[in-house]
Length: 255
Image (cartoon, rainbow, N blue to C red; front, side, top):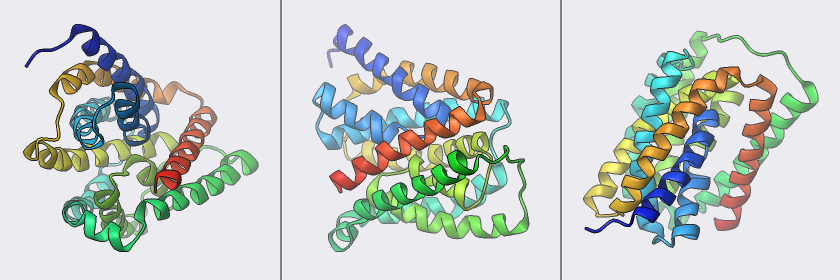
């Protein structure tokens, strides 16, 4: 297999952009990374999903390591959530075509994202609450596996991950913004790894894209997750809101 140095550099640059966004917000792989590979690099959509998914595993792992160092991950919620989310995601992915033929899941999730964004806007911009302290009462641990089951199925059937997870962690489990980002990264890393195995087995990979993307996503996600605690909390909230609006519109239009 022959690699083009210019394309490797361009892939690395794109990986850096995506990695920075994911490091700061845990959102961006699906709404920015994959569409960019299709639009700018003219990859087949299935190959783009597989290639970005593989690079996404590396990106999320790098992000998780840094978030762990910054103490931005609530491991109890991440673990309990993943116990149900992973099998639900796998089986939903296996039957994705049948599920999407019956229910317009992407459109539904797009609407959920947009409605949730309005609620977040009201809370963060209109009400302007003080920063939350991390609290993990029993009800959050009880709710986590049920939320994981539902969101895992939605992720597996639609490939949407970070945007819907971070909304649930912010709105339902009421985690502080940096903790929501870090915990979402931990959950997404495992979910992406499961999906990546399936994509590799099916040959959905452009290895030139993968090799080019990996250095960029590692650097970008490490920088983003390292400095997420140093970014003003309100700026981080606004950034998440803007990205969620973009995500919701893209999903609704494409759904």
